[in-house]
Length: 133
Image (tube, rainbow, N blue to C red; front, side, top):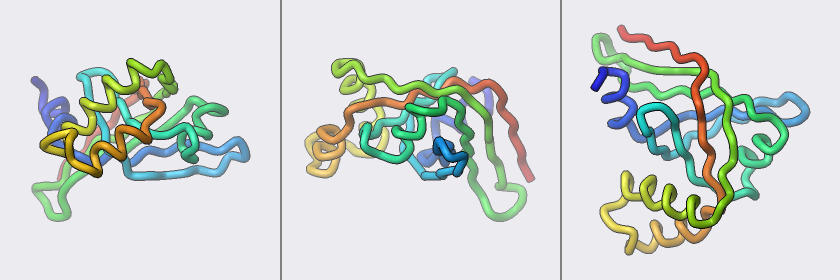
């Protein structure tokens, strides 16, 4: 596994940038699952990020760590995204995402998040840049 893949599977927060139909950027930190080629983010279709994606599929993202050299490392990119809304697929992926952050889906917060997730953002990176200091 490459250093980049190891990093992406280890980190917990991805900053996602979507753009409104008026061209206004919207950045939000999100939990994610990295498959080795794509990122998956659970959300609800009522959120600003989901509404933006319904109008504009272009996104940017950033995942980084460290505040002092030599521990500064990050990855950012541009991508196309799509909303997955098929109920069984959404629940299957949402469970995998939540299990990265909770020991069990029996946790009250995990259950509430799972119940509220009605779509998955699938991000297919087109360009990725890395940095380290």
